[in-house]
Image (cartoon, rainbow, N blue to C red):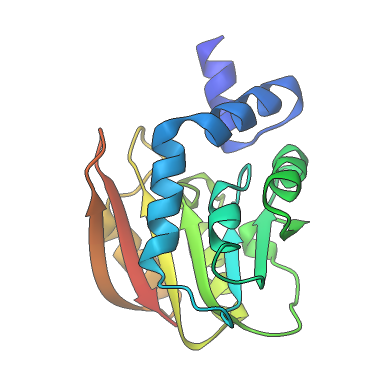
Length: 185
């Protein structure tokens, strides 16, 4: 049972996906982590923001308090429905490595506890890089709770391989600690 539920956090489907969405939307550490990540991006009213792996829309809702130009992407139809209702943002069903073409580039992007679930993190980060304007900032957040989350050194390598330049690493004191790698396109 536990393994079945855990799988639904990485690829939410059906009833298990709805349970995972509820937990992600309401667990205090998830909410705190998402809001913290948005705060690190120093959003301005004109910024265009992309969240890849938006889950139930916690970070999208936080970002919309700063700018109306927020787009979420998630490969799970369950999460697309949750995020759309929760945030009021545009939310698209797509995998990170298969992002749609957008009308304008993004100024800011974030991925909160999702890169470790992507089938090909390098391809996903390259797709995000291609969707951003030069000089745009990305925040890649990870709170390691299992083998699928890379440490920040691996995240640095993945970001650099996708064309980003690392500008900093921040830590949020939760258990386990949350790490955010900030980089520019």
